[in-house]
Image 1 (cartoon, helix red, strand yellow):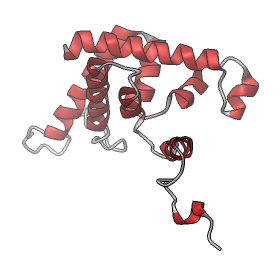
Image 2: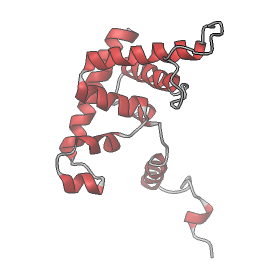
Image 3: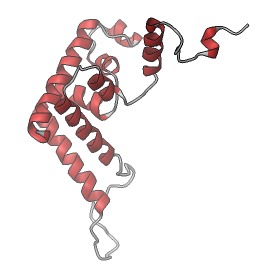
Length: 166
């Protein structure tokens, strides 16, 4: 006989508690959706969400540059220089991220860039801030560290929203 878990994987016919547990379990597997989750659960405002989206777009723009070739060095083949739009856009994105990092400071920029730019969850970003080595090795930061990183991220996105979005 089949159990209800196999025939109803999303727990649509289950209780509200079972549906919520399944949604939380599935959300753990969604990489890069931390910003949407924070906004949908009303942990950040719309302006903070838009600032996070801008940072994510800047990160995506920076990843367009190949790391094995140094585009900043002058050409040596004596051919005519053409404007390389990939270089221009990645350079502009890097400059904007550097301005944001200067505005936020080291701790805040690390938290904001990890969560908004790289798509890490607050718990994953908090591992880098954890002082207890045993908890850091286990990958389970303390509640105080998670709250600290969450506060850094919210305040940092607020600063970015005020400076670049609003």
